[in-house]
Length: 545
Ligand SMILES: [Zn+2]
Image: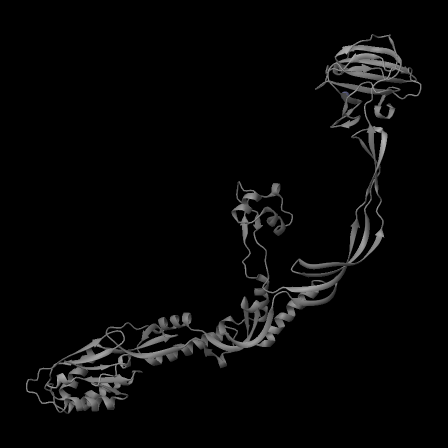
């Protein structure tokens, strides 16, 4: 039945010869006149309706009206106004089957009436070809974009005089039934989110786009790189800086940048120092250990120690903040430098064997003293990371003094009965066994003899010839013998399990006088052997041969 006026989305169907491609309302008028004026049908039953679907608008004529032809011009003008707003080429289609329709005037009156009731012309706002909203007047978009630009001028570091939209923003007339249009503030909000402005500026590009920093001018970008270099040199004031370079691939170049991305040199330096990754910290709560914190955060205790110098497992407290990651600046300056530092020279140790000390015993004869040297290095480093370190020279400023240690070689020998008397003051070993505790400071107390451990019943012999002055129980010594060798020298034998001599007996060197036991204040079978010179105990080791 119908006459349809459609937009160009269907114009591809131009093989239909009943479609007339037109570009102006005059052509539509002419086409309508041509198609309808010559019709003369008496039935006069025409209906009309306006159809609207997403992509097309159609006016379908269905119903006849009796209005006079003089109305034609004004109604057509009205239709023309509406169609003029369309960006689309308009096609009118006339179907021969509708020839019975009455005059064009009749038809157009009805068409206009219906259009004004059900269909309104609105404007679709497209950002990068995508519908973002509808507005009721095309000029609203211009106004909104103007506002947005003014805002960018006020709120960014950009000079907006040469600003261009970085995204395509278009408006297209649409004929919609009951369309909802965006208010001025809604449109502003949508554009704020979807649209950005590009201005001529400069950028620092790190590692081919891994990070990009935008600037108003190339001078700004260059000044940031210069400052980074100067700061790195300043941080090495004690060294002779040979060269600097960026660790990353860094370029500064002119180009268009987003207005809102533009940084001042100060902002850029702060952003570079901050790095990509946010610094994460953990606040210690009850029941946590460094291990659990490391485990919970996917790191290791050694990393935590590295990031938090001075951190100690036994010192972490509830509420303490622990850094979890390292700040890696966006740009690092590698400094090649020559630096001289004073370093300690560790002392060596000379060990001399001594038969006067029991095996396992040591005695420091000379204390070690560290030396020092001035070492000159050539170092390449950035942000605390050393890339290369070469020693150029070393000058010793103080020689170290080696530590000298006497190391005991003496072992418990078999007692000998071959000689007698204490001619030299040097005693024979009173028993076989191992030295389980030497003479001297022990814990908070003082050990007045040496302990020779062996199993219960091991023979104990006189260390030299002499007279037994004590034989029997003696408190903490348990069963104990004292032999007087004359010249103010005595020997004591304690913790015995068996005593084979009596007070007043004369004994000779190597003569069996008792057996090893664990009597008195003792934790296991051993001989406690003392050398007493003029009433004071001495280290028996120094008297044993
Ligand atoms: Zn002892």
